[in-house]
Image (cartoon, rainbow, N blue to C red):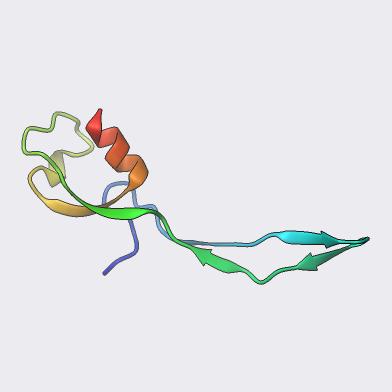
Length: 71
């Protein structure tokens, strides 16, 4: 299974932060962060041209695209 949004192409990225201890920064290890992907069925009668190619199909989409699809 791919870890990428079918619609916008959002995928994982490496993230991390520096924690300040007394007068020095303690680098913490980097961690891979994944998008919030969910299975969704795109309705047949979609009018938005961004979702036309996926009409009537079940796809993996990020939460942001699912929210935009509902509007």
